[in-house]
Amino acid sequence: MTRLPTLTSKLLDLPGVRHAFFTRQGGVSTGIYASLNVGVGSKDDPEAVAENRRRAANHLGGELVTAYQVHSATALVADGPWPAGPPQADGVVSATTGVVCGALAADCAPILFADAEARVVAAAHAGWKGALTGVAESAIARMEGLGARRERIVAAVGPCIAPASYEVGLEYVQRFTDADRAYGRFFTAGAAPDKRQFDLPAFVLMRLEAAGIAACEWIGRDTCAEPDLFFSNRRAFKQGEPDYGRLLSAIVLT
Image (cartoon, rainbow, N blue to C red; front, side, top):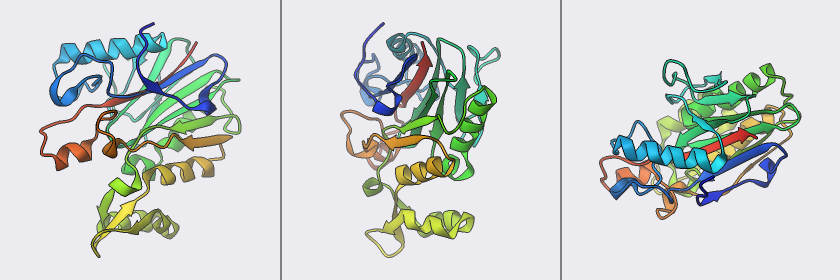
């Protein structure tokens, strides 16, 4: 296996399970994509992206499977590589040894799930829209369909944009409070009267806890504020960069 710099969660330190929240380090991409950019949808050199994905898969000892992410609440089961290319979805679930379930992100919240007893794992990409519409719950339901039990499932939220970096407008707040007035508590005052700071990781954790899983945590890193370690869509936009790399978070049964 090729070893790369990664972050991990103690919750997912389980028998028969291997996982990693990869940083941007350890790959072959250059420039704004330096260096472990795994985003097929980026404008990076496709050969570099393919090599980066190979390195990440080798690190975990399996075959990487990711979806064509569209900020949906859809989670799908993968027994191996997609036969007709990546389908549109934001969660990948598997009970097959060696299938590396992966989620790509660059500020959105990656979530890794495991039920070690049932031998079912999942990876989900939760931007604000997916988190609000239920991608985490969809992944849990798919896991249950493969024999997992939610009271045994543990989940970890990886590096994502933290509230100090996530300024939004009032119309954004409205989308959440229209769904549930109580969701207003995840927004705090911003620098201007018409701005708020959104706590994405806390919102995701709340949804995971409400789903009734055994335990969950955020590993506590802000992608927007740590340019040496993480890609960030928002940071790239603020700096006038034309594109941005994508980080990988992944989990596999061994």
